[in-house]
Image (cartoon, rainbow over all chains, first blue to last red; front, side, top):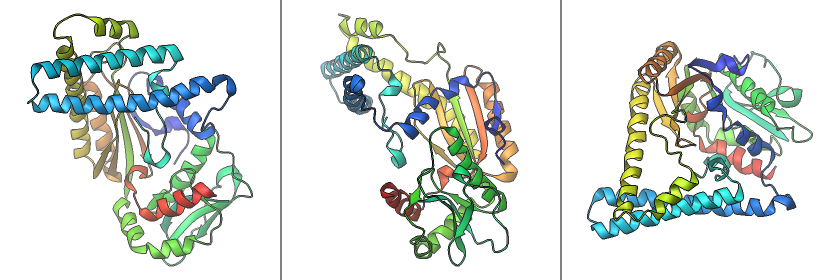
Length: 117
Length: 243
């Protein structure tokens, strides 16, 4: 029976704080579906767009890794692929810094479907 | 608004203990062997904050103490209770076998983090990444892909090393992708009640074997991750969205 959340910990070592970093997201999911504050509208839009770009980037990277692993690509292609992904990652990092977003912001809770990334 | 908590087997005499969200009384609705536990609200109850989540959880756990339970996702609601008996009757077979599948079993959750600064993380600053991208090294691209492959393989191996012994002590296991690069394992396990102690000691042993990780095991929870009954999503999710 639920007494308090702490009763639910069967085993753990060290501090539990590191496990709680996604708690603020829980509050967001419950209370704020979309932040339409005019002050933040640019950031909100950037967050949405970058989330989609990040999703594509991860999909492309996963696919690229699979193809590299499977072999059959010549060195030049692999090199080009790697450089492209590297540049893409660097650009994403710059954009995140520019808009003050972190990795956790680049995600969307799809309700019953779970989270996008 | 009808707030839904769980579907359980008919309990003819046992009164419902406890209260629902916003202090509302709990009610059983249903026919035959199946009953849904609900509360009625004039307006959508305040669902902000953790208290509402715990209230929902507590209702489900009380029911779980009495018998097999199919928990319904927090936030599921219906405009009226009228459709419930029909939905329960229509999906009777599926619901009864889902109840059998979780009978006497609980969900335990395990998460493992590789704390920042530990080996294997991928936390590099924007400057480092940018500098890397500019590097004129003739095989910088291949080196990048190699590093990504190694990271992925290392994370996969670390997760598998944790998951395998836990899954062996469970009836079923369900892994989810980590939410951050430092999250090595995020998983739920369906465990027979008497096997809880064994499972928990396996989690502790994994912690000792992997001092570089932080491993936490929580529960017992209702079988949230192991209940996948279509009627729950059609009735609760679909209608609920419009309620």
